[in-house]
Amino acid sequence: MGIVLQLLAGLLFGIGLVVSGMADPAKVMNFLDLAGTWDPSLAFVMAGAVAVTMGGYRLVLSRPRPFFAPAFDLPGKTALDARIVIGPAVFGIGWGLAGFCPGPALTSLGLAAPGTLMFVPAMIAGMAVARWLSMRNV
Amino acid sequence: MTPTAFTPWSALAGGALIGLAAVLLLAASGRIAGISGMAARLLPPYREADIAGRLAFVVGLVVAPLVYTAATGRPVAQTVGSAPLLMVLAGLLVGFGSVWGNGCTSGHGVCGLARLSPRSLVATLTFMATAVATVFVTRHLIGG
Image (cartoon, rainbow over all chains, first blue to last red; front, side, top):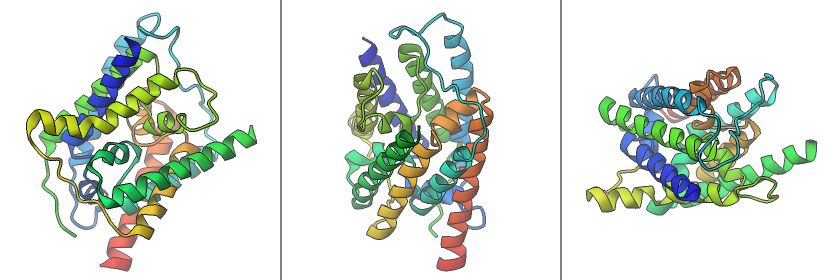
């Protein structure tokens, strides 16, 4: 049952990306183009998502544990180290170049645009390198 | 560059669906809906439990546009870049950066901000800034 709900969550997330316009790199690039053809739509995506998540998380976290796992597994790091700036800075450059972040890129796989089929394998390779480097360091 | 229509209502509605998905995932599995984290943990070495659950989420994410089109009859409109070098470079940077910084638009930008995490606020402001700067350079300084 837990796995079915996780599949459903992924499906809902992807449909949200499609409905919101986040799955269209042209719209993302225009959101980032403050000095040009600016399209503020994505600020509304973020506002809607953060508002619902904030309320919903509060409700869920008031329970002793999740429905299908022994305990909540939340990110525990609080230190502001170099990685929390360097990683997002690098990610943002890539995001600005193609208009794809990981969620929309994966959701776009099935639509099979040639650019997506180049982007996603490269993204997975980049993830593998970062994961390998961080595991070597700890 | 080609303008896109300002669509505040569908943006809000889609955003709310993304939020619902994040809440559902936390309620079911106890985890944050961070796409880069989930995707990276599907790569070896497998140290975490519940790989199957993460895989199920990613499968749902991938089939979503197909389900959307089957249910509504509407195709998903998309304009994706096609310059091979650019797309590969962008993919490498997105993949590396999101895992190195422990999150992307979903993990930091949605779930982290919703939890009022200072780390996620720093991350979100940083990737927004470099993304805006990158578009400014490529569209207005180099491209034009």
